[in-house]
Length: 324
Image (cartoon, rainbow, N blue to C red; front, top):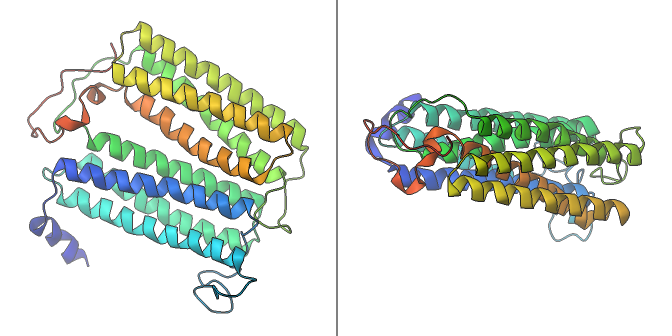
């Protein structure tokens, strides 16, 4: 196998543009698995396949035509998407080796996806074996966001020209975007605690956190509001600092998604936490995480060059930046 991996780049050549499409596919699938995982949870299908790695009674797949296997089918589809994610990640790694010119940063980022997927497989087994303990479910989701962050970084960096970026001191807009990104982490973590306290545990018999849901919701709401304010400040600082139109557009999208998430969150709280809105909120959290990361990355020096300019040669140096 090792010999095959070493020979593959000599037989197959990928242009920077093609490899960027590969990284986009990996990012899309890694995001999709969070959405399908949320569907498993809100439909109470978390133990639809009670065994691991098989589904039930030693069978890899559920008996699809039995009327009692609806939950098993939902959980099995989620596992199939996990398989597609694994393939996409493998292609991303092989593509980084076949890309011309080969870049070490892209190879390491693609390998980080492999480590993350392996960790997810292990956590998935632990989640099933612990009968959907909220800590295991919470860890499963948070690790998914870490992997998505690596996938976003891989996709964005794959769009940068080959060569070294010109070095400049970190600007105040970068500090502001860092603050917003850091504040988003506890806001999302509090959201996972709230979900682990609420009614949608993936199975009616699943254990829940012994916390007061309204109190946890208030903490989560305050953290989200603080983050949103920091994000707005970062966008204003970026505008006043003369950041690129690309960065300002991404920042505006991130603010819009953050506001939408707040609306969905308050709506689901005051309407009794309906399953559909919980699923929308999970998908929105993933979209917000990606949007904020893209805004933050767009403020780095190399991100000032449009993705269409990738592959200009290893000797090209980047002189243009997105922020002062």
